[in-house]
Length: 333
Image (cartoon, rainbow, N blue to C red; front, side, top):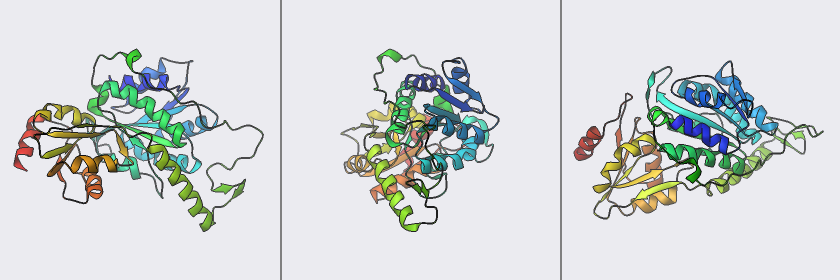
């Protein structure tokens, strides 16, 4: 299953600490990793807030850390994610999406947390968000998520959806070749004071220093932009006979793959920062761009901002997806 592939990818990437709270449809990640004690430190946390902060603490202590959840739990983790951004702590946060808001439709998949993944915490920060679309990619992109976390010294969000998480495929893990980056953060406890969670320079808190905040943000933004440039993950199928480009990601891309005979298809894997150059190049070859997604147009808005032209959308709400419906709605546009 996709969830099992995520767990296997995390172990391959060097995961040594995992904390989470059970939640549908992400729980199989916990189930799989629970089988790997004492190879890894595994914590069934008391809640979502505790699990994200445990992962932050473990990363600061020198462990490669991960936590997993679904939409409601992701909402609870957001302050911790912001803390990890400010402290520049590498870790991976997996969000297996289901219909929301709130408890929503607990067993039905969705793609409604796209904007939350990028902007869910408060303040200004630059997110790095990845989204696979097959079980093989769940394995490979999880490893890339850990690499990107170490590369950027930040939390990286790995998005799945309930369909992809429970999709079953046969893959040869040994045939997937992804280099694993070593730890980038020296563990605390080296005899020095460290102001965790504060704006601090040379050990001096700068929490009311506007000039330093601007300096800090410019440095972190440049660091994140440079790191993101090393993860330009996407797939573009150009159909020379088509004047329409479909943008789709995750399980939606998987469902529309039979449409390659009639349309060009662009699949972003790095959702944020948005693949601006790649999207512009693909869109320039087409008269019409359509974003197909299981939400009410969340990524469509991002694509439209990048392209600065009309972008059409097909929003699939309510936890189900149908190629027949997509075909019909494309013909109506």
